[in-house]
Amino acid sequence: MAEDKDLFRKAMQGVKPLAPKIRAEKPRAVKSARAAIKPAQIASHAAPKKLPELKRGDSAGIDDSTYAKFKSGDMPIEARLDLHGMTSDAAQRAVSDFIVRCFVSRMRCVLVITGKGQGSKRGGDDLFGKSILRDALPQWLNMAVLRQKILAFTHAAPRHGGSGAFYVLLKRQRHS
Image 1: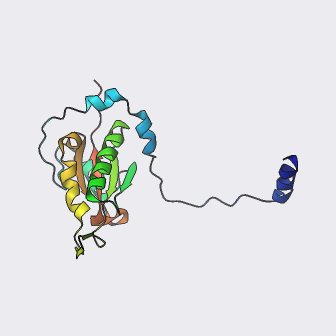
Image 2 (image 1 turned 90 degrees about the vertical axis):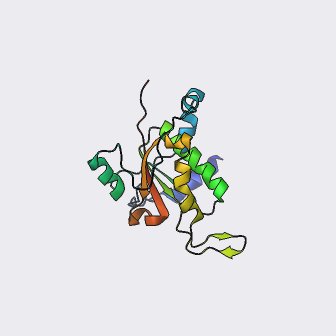
Image 3 (image 1 turned 180 degrees about the vertical axis):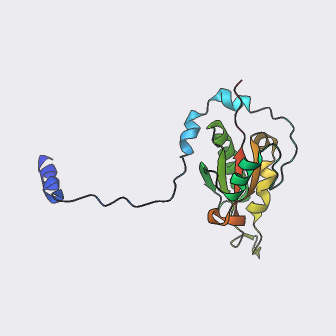
């Protein structure tokens, strides 16, 4: 064992670390949010109020400056969910879990990538150009348990996926 360490040190003499590469922004890990969720927090969100249906691009209750940043993609994206390759059922569960975890983690703006539908197939019928997940996402976001956590959603800017992705603006949690 000591010989291995000596051999390694000898082999690494004069080696310098590579210069760091500039990388794209990394969103905060959402996985850590799961550990932070307490049963009491989940229970406090279990009794949803009836809210009006949100439509893509609705901005009621958001000041103009915040909405402009949100819609243009200039608001920091705190987490991303990519639904590519998922079935509709799996994607719906993933979206629900993702929104709840992000809300509990006090995130504000998140990105849900649905894709544009070029690879969608159902029962052998080619549905080229029709995105099942993209079309279903607004309905899922309007489910009562999620709707109470969401202020707005809209298609992403082209640099974040355009019509194949959605920005979702989450409400701030009120302290009780």
